[in-house]
Image (cartoon, rainbow, N blue to C red; front, side, top):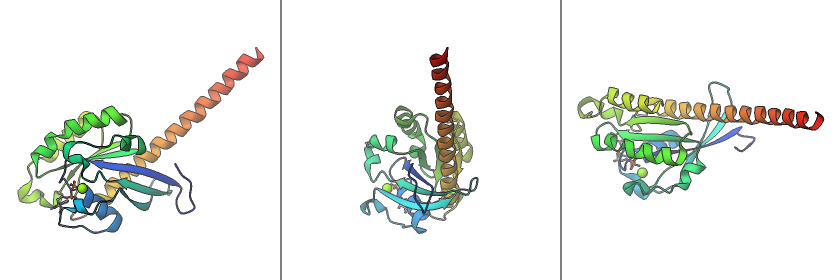
Length: 201
Ligand code: GDP
Ligand code: MG
């Protein structure tokens, strides 16, 4: 966590999921407000940033969103990313069942490398739902419930739910950071008490 005059917190996130589900465009839509109909694997960026204001605390938070830039093709994600980030968005494409079926593998990867970090499940390409939907909303909800995480359907193309998803993620990470800080403070207080007890018995 960094303190800066423009913002009070720095939160790092990553979006994972099969190649082609729309991760890169989803990040672009959020940070730059646009969408490219072309597959943007060639653009190549490590991460993009945007400052937002949390609804709950009115704190200004700088979100740094990491892209997996093609590494997801063979699920060959550099595992260091999971140590770096504080929140993870797991995405599938509601018009392509294989991307939904591969969720278990993505969740396994997350469980192995970042088990207790906040997560959100996102079904992308909601703009194509009418006519091209293959995975129902209920199916997505069921998986999210199994893992006990929030679920959204959205679209990097139309922008539906994009801000909502990043806001929700930021709120979850922020709450986690505050809880951790409280725990550290409580533990320090307890330790000091114990020290005192030890010292003055
Ligand atoms: P990535 O491999 O997960 O990073 O996916 P990309 O962002 O490169 O997108 C893959 C393809 O899906 C591109 O052709 C995009 O134009 C298309 N795409 C991405 N998001 C959406 C969406 O929300 N709606 C529609 N209709 N197409 C999308
Ligand atoms: Mg990409």
